[in-house]
Image 1: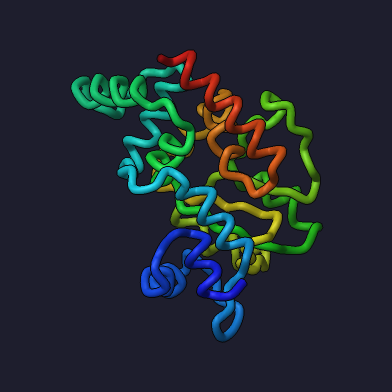
Image 2 (image 1 turned 90 degrees about the vertical axis):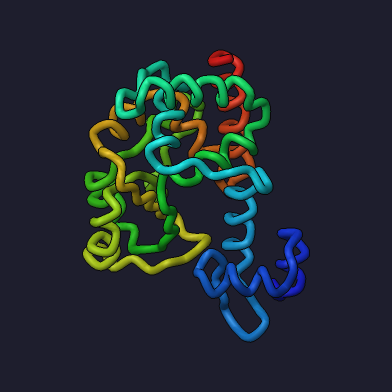
Amino acid sequence: MRTTEAAERLGVTVRHFNVLVESGQIIRVGAGLVDRASVERYLASHSGGRKRVWAEHTAWGAIALLSGEQAPWLGQVQRSRLRSALRQVTETDDLLTRLRGRAQVTTCTGHRSVADRLRHDLVTVDRSRLGLVEDAAVVDGYLAADDLDNAVQRYRLREDASGAITLRATSFDLDTVRRLAHGRALGAIDAATSLDPRERGLGERALRTVLETFA
């Protein structure tokens, strides 16, 4: 995709778009050309416009509350304000933007033989609750931020915006993430930013149900 076309697709100036490229959020593939999948992925995860992104511990607090948990790492006042803020969220795009700070997302490609081994190193969500069938070639899960580079090197992964391996690096407590991964909320949130239309649609519908139930 040409740079000018991509900037128009995102609704930003070429100058701002170049900042996104330089920061690694959009992948450059040649002079005046960028990777189309990286543009679509950025668009999917930033569709909430200029809504404020919550800090990592706040984002995980919101996910916990949506999952019916108490988020004890938040103070009572902060927890009460977060509950109120969640009840005011009516659009899934709004929520997805606010929750973007929960993890740094890196999409990669690698040999099919590493998929099963890599899954053992990740915290994966329960996709079956969304009606999604597991694909042996697709890997999507959370890991400690400090382990990201080691995982990429150990499994000889290459960054690729259209790759089948999604690594979500977080500095938050992984035991808590593992517990939340069994609930419907986190699976819906992750699926709602997928580039696959069917998966994204299922995620958005499930997330709307989560928001309505919480409200």
